[in-house]
Every structure is written in C-alpha cells, then in structure tokens.
Length: 435
Image (cartoon, rainbow, N blue to C red):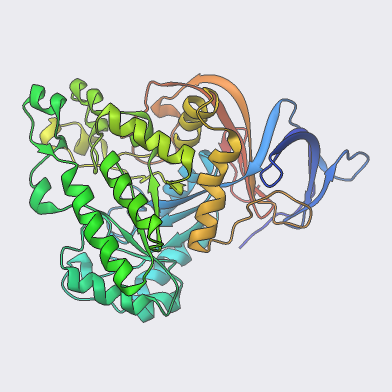
C-alpha cells in the first residue's frame, strides 16, 4: 500500500482543542504519519499550506454506514462510499451487515475490511450480523465474526422480533465486550406505513408508522439488556417517547447508548408534503415536538452519538411515487455542513459538543482507533474546514447515489482537507488518494 509521508506544514490554523475547549491559532507540522509539532513553526523543510481563517479538528467517525458492497454495487461501492466519507470530513466509517451476502461469516468480514484497506481512504470498520442472513431465526457464528474484527453486531434494517433470540445473543457477547446495535421497530405496529403517523399523515392520506412501534420495542429490549447486564446501542432514535424510555433505562444503569441522525435532528414530517422521496426513511421524519426533543437530547447528553445512517439508492429507485420508493437517504457528505450550520452557528450547541458526538463518543463506545484530540505525537488523522456559504447540490457528491435530504440547502461551512495517518485524502475539495 503506497503511503506518502512527506512533511507538510499547515500555517495559521485555528486549532480546536477538544480537551481544554479552546480554539487557538497555531501551525501544524506533520511527518511520518504523525503530528510532529504544534505552535509557531518556521524554516522547516516541508510543503507549506496557508490555512488562514480555517479550523482544524479531530476527524469525524460514523458508526452507521450502509456500504452496499458486496451485493448492491449499483447503489454504492466501498470505493465510492470512502470517497464520500473523506469528502465530508469522516476519517472512519462502520459498515452495516445488510449486504448480499450478509456480513454473517468470517469470510465476508475479511472481504469488507480488506477492500477498505485496498481503497485506502477512510478507515473501514464493520458490524457482524446477529442472526444468519439477518433472518432473525438463528444466531450467526458470533465468535468467528469477533475474531475477524467486527466492532459490534447488528441486524439493522430488521428488528430482532424474537426476544429469546436477543436474550441469548446478549448473554453470548458479554465475553467480548461489544454492543448489539438495535434497529427498533415493531413490524406488527409499523406494517405498511411510509411516514410518521400524525396530523400531516392524516392530511396526506398515507399509511402511517406510529412512534409506538419504536418506543415499545425499545423498552422491551432495554429490559432484556438489563436482565442479562448486556451492552446495547439504540440507533437512529426518532421520537420523544423513545428518549424517555432510554432515559429511564440509563437512570437504572442499563448499559445503553444511542444515536440520532442529522435528518431527524433538523427535519420534521411536514417536509413529506412535497412528496419528495428523499424525505422517506426509517424511522420516518416525525413531528416538530419529536425533533425538538432530539435536539434537547444532544444538548443534555442523553443522546451519545450523531450517526449518518448513510443509505444510498440508485436514482431510478427513488424517482417513483412516494409509496413505492425505498427507505433511506445518504448523509456522509452533508452531515457536518448542515449540523455546523444549523446547530453550531445558530448557538444550539458549540463545536466541542458536536465533535464529542461525532468523534469522541463513537471512538469511546465502539473502540475505534482514531485520535480524539490533536496533539504532538498523535496520528495525523484530522480535518480542516472553513466557514463559507454555499449550496448543497448533487455535483458536490462523491457518493454514487444522490438521494440526500439536504439537496438545495444553503450551508455555511466546507471541509477543505481530510487526512488519515498523514496522507491527505481530500485536498481543497478534491480526492487525492496517496497524495
């Protein structure tokens, strides 16, 4: 694998210190994949890049990415999803197990991880399936999956409807200290729904998905986790009631963490009135009351992580009537711009809290080998961004797919450089493999 470790000096950068919660102008010298020196640096043999007005921070980490490869390469490949990742400031992403074949064997785990190394952009991690072929009938060979390097288990997209199966899985994985990542949806309640059940849904005459389908099964699963003292992570929380259930469990010291997506934080079910299928996802966009509760959840620390749930689909799959379109939207390339614009610049949270949700906590809870602070001697794995007004359009995307909920939105920040172990993967908006 070709690496270039020429020394690079980033001058005049506003360095974000996430530990001390300070922002201070410094120069950053990198070499041999490491941060050699921080401070005022002159007269060194290095390529100099002036970053006046820009900011440097630890790179972003996503714990919920649908790689699509193997099996759905017409939607996305590990190469294109990696390009999308570094384009959005992500230095590490975690693949879900719902590929074809599913990531339920040691061989498939090896394939995904080796492909990620071959592509050599963002670091690729993966979950293994909880059940064989994600069918919810029989446990996968969990020991083999863990030996090959999965960082958790998930049947995401499919709820584990059999409580005894989840009970056995949680008992089994205690020896490995990894979580089960749960997609919480009681399919007996959501049935053929396509959007949030509420006033907007009633007006549009569509079939609804009640928040009851999410919070009731969340309660069931957290009681099972409490019973066996097992680790669970509730992904893409969408409703106020689900947050209440999670808070109740955390207050009882259940080993639970949770995440929320950018689209659930920033959008509500009124967007569906446009019948734009880029607003169709699971769980669905819910009410404004739910959205505000999610924002409050990241402010208070109840929500641990922001994850993208990057779910690419081919253009022709989404360009159909709303009822027939698949669920899911992309998110790697727009997560940081929209969150920084709508939450940081508007004073809802500060940049330190955003980085805690998108770097520090994912690394902490999922044992991902990515730096959470920029300091001398640390791997040079970080991003540099600048405040700049621009409009999100499909021309910006490196992903193979275009089904994004934020197309047309004006944002106020742009990722300029993404580095992984000293290699510049993104240089002023252009992918530079091995640069």
